[in-house]
Image (cartoon, rainbow, N blue to C red; front, side, top):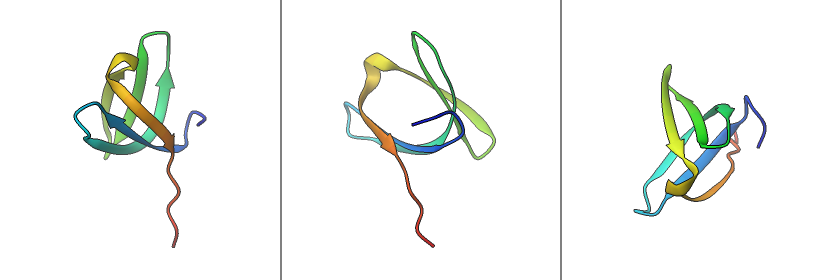
Length: 55
């Protein structure tokens, strides 16, 4: 996914988070979820993909 796209991220506890990809660096990613930033380490991500909303 590219910066600014919606993504769906699953961690190893099988919790799913959906947000807008704000940034990514060598340590992890930052998602924007309802105007709040969430930083997730790559070590905590079991899977991630672009999230499409169908209207």
